[in-house]
Length: 138
Image (cartoon, rainbow, N blue to C red):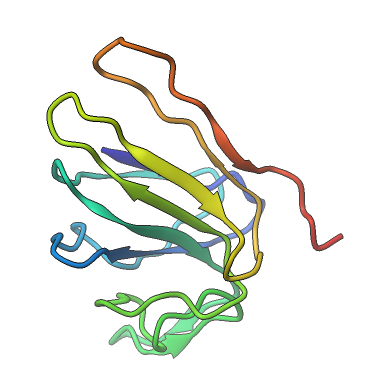
């Protein structure tokens, strides 16, 4: 379960993209107001990316655009990745008690601070937080 929390003082529009061979998450794009959180359920073996878009406007049919992180001009990204510059959370979830692999990447640029705080379920070792919590655009 991914819990996405908007700690920004403004609205963001998270986007998701499943890796090859894994199913899309229950939503591939949505609005998240300041202070709100949403939970998205994935499956063992899932891999993909999650990012936040900013400065978005969409019409009633979900057509529009974002200033950063746009994914094809739609609210639901539907298999489209983020247009740079965008801070990315990337993950491959292990199956059973296999390890998960995750990072916060700036390879596609930077648009927002992002922090990932994983919670382990098997108790074998602590999970490490990762991210960039400072606005590096300043």
